[in-house]
Amino acid sequence: SYELTQPPSVSVSPGQTARITCSGDALPKKYAHWYQQKSGQAPVLVIYEDSKRPSGIPERFSGSSSGTMATLTISGAQVEDEADYYCYSTDSSGNPSFGGGTKLTVL
Amino acid sequence: QLQLQESGPGLVKPSETLSLTCTVSGGSISSSSYYWGWIRQPPGKGLEWIGSIYYSGSTYYNPSLKSRVTISVETSKNQFSLKVSSVTAADTAVYYCARQSSSAESEYFDYWGQGTLVTVSS
Image 1: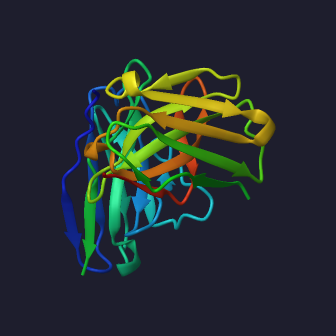
Image 2 (image 1 turned 45 degrees about the vertical axis):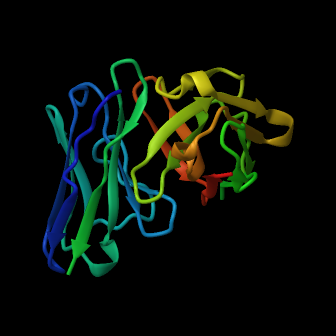
Image 3 (image 1 turned 180 degrees about the vertical axis):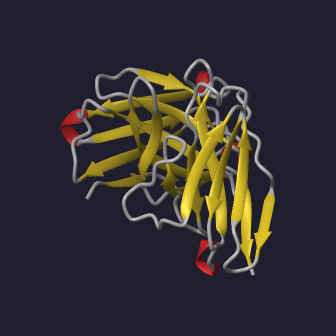
C-alpha cells in the first residue's frame, strides 16, 4: 500500500511555529490534505488541496507542498492545537491513504 | 449542516460479519460530486481507509481489505452500509463514515460521523 511518512511527534512552546511534514512518492502529482484529531473525537479537515483552509479553520493553519513533501504549518501554536495530525493523499492509482500521524505537543 | 451517524452492533464475535450503517442527514447521498466512505482506527493507532461508494453503487476498496469488505448504498433511505466478513481481533476499531469530496483532480473527506467502536471478541 502507498506510504505517507510523518514524524511520530513534534513539540513546540505556545506561540512558536509548528511544522509537520508528510512525504510520499506521489505528492508531486497528487494533493495533500491534513486532518486534526483531538483525543476521543473524529478527525477534522484543517487543510485541503495542499494549502486551502476550510471555513472556520483559524488562519494560523497553513499548508504547502513541494516535490515529494507536504508541510502543515501552525503559526503561533496554541495549547488547544495539541492533537494528532494526519496527512492524506492518494497513490498513482487513486487509492486513498493516510499518513501514520504526528502527535503535536504544545507546552 | 450535513451530519453523518454510524449505527450497528458494538460487539461482534470472531469469524462473524461486522455490519454498520451510516445515515446521512442535512443533504442528499445522491449528490453528484461526492463519494461516501468508511475509515477505521484501531485503539491507539492511525487511520485506515476501508472503501468508498458513489450513489450509483460504484465502489472501490482498500486492496488490503478488499476480499472481506462490501459497501452498499440505499439512496431511498439516504444511507450507506459496510460489511466486513470473517472478523478477527485485528478488526477491533472505531469505525467512521465520511463524505468524500471528489473531482478529477482531488478527493478528500470533508464531513465525518462521530465514529462507533466495534470490538471483536467472543
